Length: 395
Ligand code: PMP
Image (cartoon, rainbow, N blue to C red; front, side, top):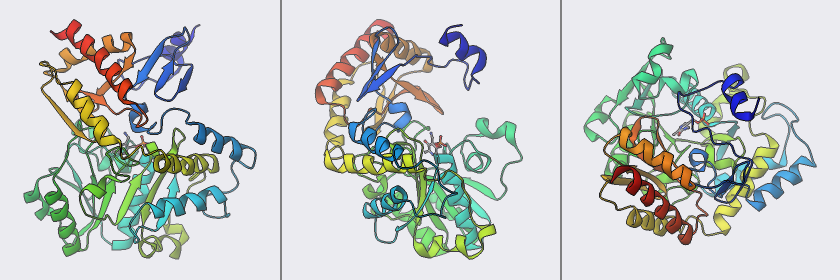
């Protein structure tokens, strides 16, 4: 059997029509197939490869750590240099009160930890989340998701959860003194890049302050430079009580975190059995990769260039078939009339060497979230190919 057959026979499938690209090697913004095919990756493995695939500094950090140790002990017992250095580096990117980091393995796990922390700290049981939100696939993170279709088969889910409309100030009245936390994506990703106003986020934070509810911002997709700031909340002049991140954090390695103040995080240690336990959380190889990723983001001026790069994409994709382009930096959604129109364009673009896809809850829009290392010339090249695909399939 070849890999294609093995994929279909033995690997659990998550969708009826997987992209099924076979990739043998990657470098920077490029992915290479077994027969010499070359693709530009415009989705970064869904917002993961922000510093490009296999960034040399990330690879070097991984290799150095491989020569020292792999797993030592469950999270939080031994002092491991990559973990403590990463926690410090993360704190240095954040406002002073976000100085305490709990390292985990993935986005969903970071969300689980944040929800548990909020319940524990506040002593309250109710969580508010947003319509069309995506926070992960485990029971807790799924429970705060905003898409009924995704949840229906798994009920009963976590109780005490209610929904508000993302970006609508009038709905904030649902936040009360019974609310443990509001969890919200700073920029909604799987809803198809939905951006709320600064006024909204300020009103949300004010309402949380007024009621004592904690504000959990999910920057699993929007963090690590993706929107043109290191953290997306920097656009909105608010500070969360708990921040969750993953994806781009590891430069291609699995790692996530929920980050808060020492005061809030300390409730976990007062009774360890009521705390949060992880065997592999903050794996030293992933932590070393993450530390290198932060250094690359800072040293290569990648974040400063997000806005001009996004501007160029928008200019070059201004095509009659494109209905609108929603974006916050290089987190972009290019809207077409329908999935039926979009899908052949995506398929053709892949044939021509550019990989994009659509969103979990928004299949009429093309996802564009390239490595932040993409050059202006490569943006021109990518957009020419997408325009050619549009011309062939939709004009
Ligand atoms: N939150 C957001 C905003 C996400 O985009 C994702 C992943 N798409 C998650 C949470 C879940 O992350 P993971 O797949 O690493 O569990």
